[in-house]
Image 1: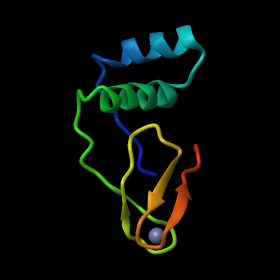
Image 2 (image 1 turned 120 degrees about the vertical axis):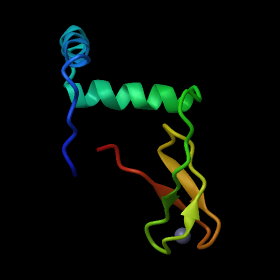
Image 3 (image 1 turned 90 degrees about the vertical axis):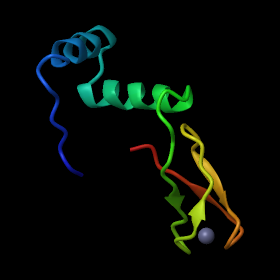
Image 4 (image 1 turned 60 degrees about the vertical axis):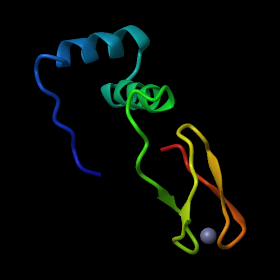
Amino acid sequence: MSSVEIKPDVMPYLCQKAEEEGKSITEVLDELLRLMLAHGYIEQTFNLRCRSCKHEIGYQINDYKAYCEYCESIVFFDKC
Ligand SMILES: [Zn+2]
């Protein structure tokens, strides 16, 4: 996993939010991105692939599973 560099002008916000909610900065960022994707502030243009056949699968953000039409199986995503 690549590391993320945060510019210093937004860093205090992230630190504060993380401290208030007892979360890590990574968790705060993760939540923000999910919120933005879920509400359409940023478009979800990427596709996930099935683990067994590598076929693209339809996935909505925050789903924990998706259905692969190619190998007709349900693909689960681990929460990491
Ligand atoms: Zn598949």
